[in-house]
Amino acid sequence: MDLLKSMKISSSGLAANRKRVEAISSNIANAQTTRTAEGGPYRRKEVVFGSEPARDSFSDILEGEVDLDAQTVHATEVVNSNEPPILKYDPTHVDANDEGYVAMPNVNVMKEMANMISAQRAYEANISALNTSKGMAMKALEIGR
Amino acid sequence: MIKSIGNMQNTLKSYDMDSWSKSVDVGKELNFKELPSEKAIGSEGNESFGDFLANSISKVNNLQQDADFAMEKLASGKSQNLHETLLTVEKAEIAFKTMNQVRSKVIDAYKEIMKMQI
Amino acid sequence: MKVNDKTLQALASGLKFREMRQEIISSNVANAETPGYKAKRLDFESALQRALDVDGNMGMKATDEKHFDVGSGGFDNLEPEVIEDPNGVVNESGNTVNREDEMAKMAENKIMYDALVQLMNKKLALKKYIINSER
Image 1 (cartoon, rainbow over the protein chains, first blue to last red):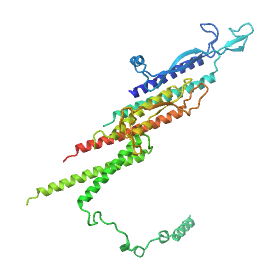
Image 2: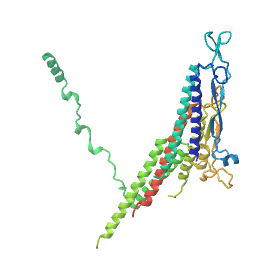
Image 3: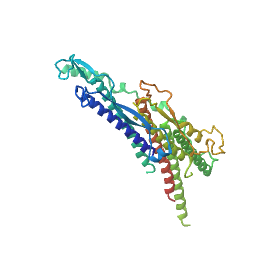
Image 4: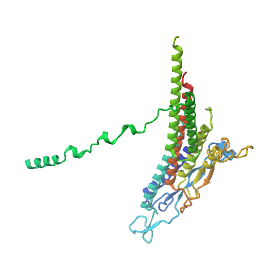
């Protein structure tokens, strides 16, 4: 039972990191988008992680029982970044305003790449934890063989 | 070319077999009579076979207890010595299985004797 | 040789606690970037050592069920402790998880777990051998 819970925790880490990579790819793809549905340039998306206690079933939640205080992780929110868009001087651009400035998305591609590598490493670490838990469960099946 | 072969031969001759190996003249250095010899086990005279057997069984039991302690220490994290624990366990297992084989042989010998017709 | 002796129970308890430890480590790895999360540790060694009393140093008797089990080999009310790692270095988002550290701890935990399974198999195999030896 404990190992199954471990695997659930690791899989939550995998899902959260995948969401993060999704947000990063969206940012990179839209690094030059000046027109969006809400008007204005594309705003960089960020994923906020939150942890919550790992619950097995609804009955656990009802009883308020927390075994070991191990936490699953959730990508709780995808927020638009609050940083202001970058103003670039380009009077020939279609979306230039009166002074000739274009509001470009506040996406720094280098930073996004670095974040992506970090997210990939986190993904791999969670895979390793998942494999270890699975290995332990398989080993336990070998007792007495 | 011929000169180099001649040189090679000269070099080889200067290192002939005898100077390579130092042969030991065995007869002079060792005196066989003075070597310590191991006494055959159980030849102390006074110890009976029964005592010897009881001694061996208690030794095997001690090994088993050592193995148990080693495993408990490893499980509780008191000792981090993985190889030592496994060695202790192996020793105990081998001793136990050897004793079991000895027991089988003794029983076989007994049966053999009982089969003999007077 | 008893069928269910203290050593077998010790090994089984060790297995159970290492599983719990794996759960905590997985939680740490999954939350390595959650803001405000503090790395946790599971400590079972002190409770288990007290219960086993391998060296015979602690000569205490447990007469009430709330007493700690010392040396009597009572394994039912062994409680491990979950503590926050006191040595954690806090980074700017309030997270103290060091991922490499967690991976190393996970590897060590797995190796010890495998070792305990192997020892348990050896013990059980010996008992089966005794049962099966003829004559």
